[in-house]
Length: 451
Image (cartoon, rainbow, N blue to C red; front, side):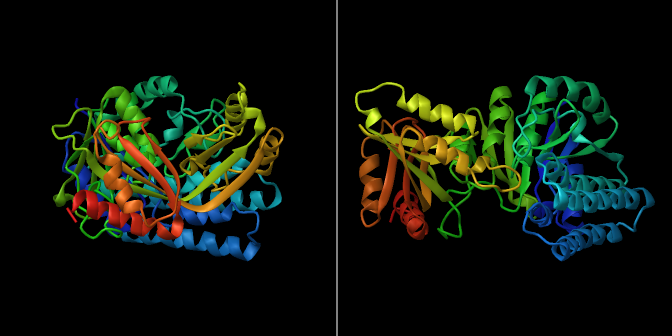
């Protein structure tokens, strides 16, 4: 059987009407047998607030009440079937217990279990919406198959174990019913709940597709595909019909919010095509991400990633010496920090940090322990208030005239870093946050609109 895995984000399962539209999308495709859902829109943010140390008792009660209102509004539209109501009551009660537990003793394991409950609620409700349409469906606890390590907040999937468990426990169910499961969460070897980090539902869908050898992953969101840039920044931005895995990986990494950066990895490994479309307007089509595409232009898109941190390290030890960079990267690795861009001189190294890998609780990357460790062998300066703009395309490193066209646009702006040449698919610049929107708009006009 040709299997399609469909993933629906938070806005797509925000309320009963949204879930109803998504159920129609699923049932319109007979090959769509596995559905991965996020928490209903707003729920994860409220759960994250419940994990914060500063929240008081009144704040906890208020947020628990808000979450319950979102979920019970959907349940009421379903007519409050007894089995679904009982499941929802149990999950919301567990939410209250865990939030109280965090107030007395903070634990990353407890945080992950609390954060997982939004997806568990939406999967129970969404499978009920499908059953309401006369199709057999049930919610499946993804923790039975999505095995991870025990790095709570940003767990690493164990791909080989996921493949074995998914084929043993999940695949046999797909022939008889539509299975609805959770994105974003997994479990370690001991059965403790883990999370994959913010935005990890796309990644979950791709991992399950890889394990089950699916033919396609559909990512249903609130926009009709991937655009040449954010239309809010450049009104003449237009949707892209198809892009390659390499281009999509660059776009996801450098700020295209419709895709989680890790999503592409399992798809590339198995060459599973990925579709991105709007659950609100499925008739508009979307973007296909494939191993090979017919058209590979020099300029494909302009991506923006805000809230960037530039780490400047200065040390005379770098001068005609070996080992400084190795020691620096070893320190960053011990603190689970991923580096994006890097430039070096004789005694300086500047690098940007990948905040997309922040853990589920939203805690910052630059801990005091990390800064102290780095300070032992170099002078450290941290710059915030920056944004990363990436020009995505093909043959960028080998096509004459690229830099001239880009730098003409950048001339009036303060550029903190330029990275080009490591990949044929991108040219990246770091600019101040206040100038980022105008830089993106001007680049799009110059490269895509013929202005």
